[in-house]
Length: 236
Image 1 (cartoon, helix red, strand yellow):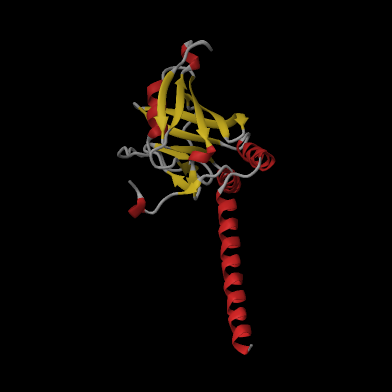
Image 2 (image 1 turned 180 degrees about the vertical axis):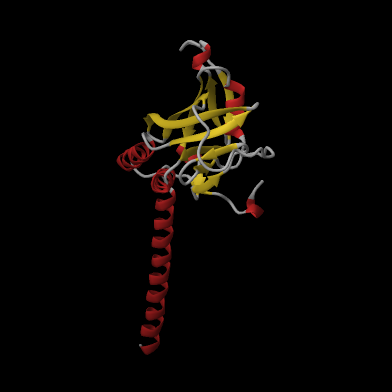
């Protein structure tokens, strides 16, 4: 009888361990799966509020011997569950006066000179504008969402500088971008130039706003089932 009780006790412990393991796996699976539509709506609205009216930066740059100001803004203009449409606008205009402090120094161009390069392409006498329509699928983005300080050759930014909030696309995934130049007379029917990007990037000038947007984007990506960026050894 004593042996029977002992065996029964072992079996109960085993069943308890198996049950705990199954519950843990179930919690992990639930956390990695997309949440319900109400959760997704809430987090995407939080992200929209964090971006709209806050994603704005201004740089003063020297291009072809002329000083120009480049203003870049972004806003979420459409949401459909985990699908977002972000409109980014880059406006280039002649700088009114030399900023106080040290003069602009010519620097070698780097991969982070995208803002200055776009400004050079559009600049002439008067104001020029470029518009980017970014079509993002949150479930194909990854965490962690990063905040990085950006530097652009031949440009200076006021305040804390330019802060980039970005989430990389899952390896093998890209997002479509439509590039237009409204100031050049394109109509709404014009398709613009199709491009592809491998991350969703937004630019801020205030650290608090950048951090708020980073947290909101990370919550939205996780809610839609986005995965962590894989270790280098796991990349294809």
